[in-house]
Image 1 (tube, rainbow, N blue to C red):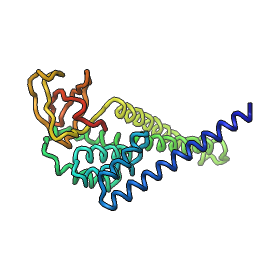
Image 2: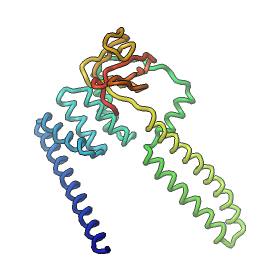
Image 3: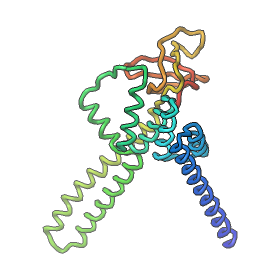
Image 4: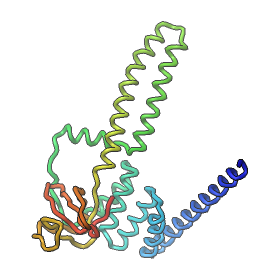
Length: 252
């Protein structure tokens, strides 16, 4: 039994090692093709990794750069947004996304938010889910240390200090846990995407025979409200809503 288990673990190790090696080869191949100006082939190399389930800020960032150089702004913005979702404070991604967005046709006026709503959104989105998880774990460890200090210290002053610090850290831990839950819920339920076709007609209902609501163009970011039979109900930053064929959009 132990031998079978050991053999299984060894097989899993070598298989995972082989996949990692293959991913590294495709990444290097894509980078080399990009450097030589073969953007179409570079896209194919990077896309193979994406199709095989690989994710990473560098992968999406490089894929976005290749699409941008190939003149496919919609797919470039889509992949920059995916990279930014994994690394929200990465300056290179933010800069390139800004350059790509400047090429879009639609300039939607964003509905203004109340200042405390902007502040709250900024706080929740300060870290990714993984970032908030790490932060919460660090706060948890510090909280345990303050509790340990209370029981291990022989000084009354240090015990009083540990009580105050411990209560403060517990409050921070509760707040951090709440922010992690909110961020996770937002990522799970608030979906958005990018228009990847040159133009897309938004309908009043999910039916080709329905009336036209508005026309949007490549690279525009939209929120997903609902989905039905190959159609997606979208909402623009200015509040307009309509139904668009799903294939015209790329999900972030």
